[in-house]
Image 1 (cartoon, rainbow, N blue to C red):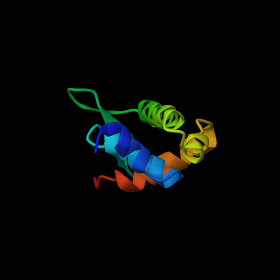
Image 2 (image 1 turned 60 degrees about the vertical axis):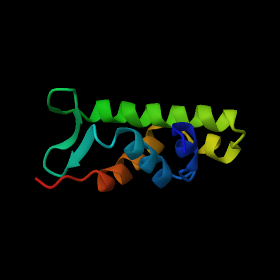
Image 3 (image 1 turned 120 degrees about the vertical axis):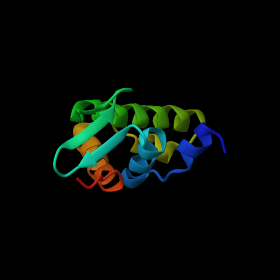
Length: 101
């Protein structure tokens, strides 16, 4: 299964979006109850919630683009980049990316 097909395979839900972000960026982001969101900048882990939020937005836009091209209207409509849906995806993603410590 190719990258586009995999992105389209996740459900059109906040949880599906969180899994899509993890699929694309799981090795480069992490969440800790102590320090919050971090991303790998190529050299070190940097605490930066905004950078992770941008990856969520990029994933939603990418899924929306491919859903439109594939005529998947339900998925396309679910890829909302407003603040509330982004926060929901980030909250779900935190549970998927939790690092103890």
